Amino acid sequence: MGLKRQKVAKKTISFYKYNFSFREPFQILIDGTFCQLALKNKIQIKEQMPKYLMGEVQLCTTNCALKELETLGKELYGARIILQKFQSRRCAHLKDPVPASECLLSMLGETNPHNYFIATQDHTVTAGVKKIPGVPLLYIILNTIVLDKPCQASLDHVKAVSLGELVSTAQQQSIRSLKEERASHSRTERGGEKRGRGNRAILTL
Figure 1: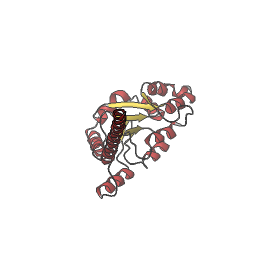
Figure 2: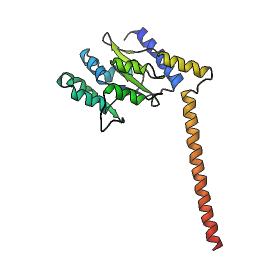
Figure 3: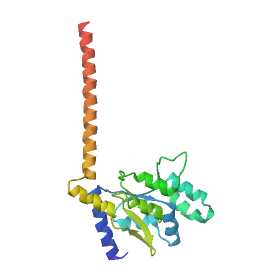
Figure 4: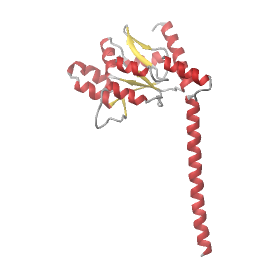
């Protein structure tokens, strides 16, 4: 693995860690196109991915991506066998599968809340990913796994946060945690009040 490529990947990973709260194990959402090219180029995804990303990874896919490979037949049998070895993440299309490209983009939503990396060779997915801030994109080129540089949407998001125009991902998580904590505390207090009223009623009897 080239030292320069490793250095560039390290810088890119640091960008996502610092600005979008990415943490190990990194969740790599993979489709059939990536597996097909990896097979063709004799790339061992399970062994090479953690080495390249310099950290623990969870390789995963969706039911739609698997179903798509099944319908495409024998030519993609090898890619399907590889994809089946990865963890399956629950998508919203369990009863009615959609194209893998549509499914993967739906898993990201507008903000990639689960901090997925996307590994694909599909131009539709790539184009969609580049419109969403905070989505690391992996693809294969010249027999090598490559982590793409942060897209303009990610750079614009980070700039907006630094200017105080947006709340960062870490701040959003803190706000959610505080809201949940307050809601839980409020429910506990209401429960205590109900028990207190019940006890007073018993005493007056």
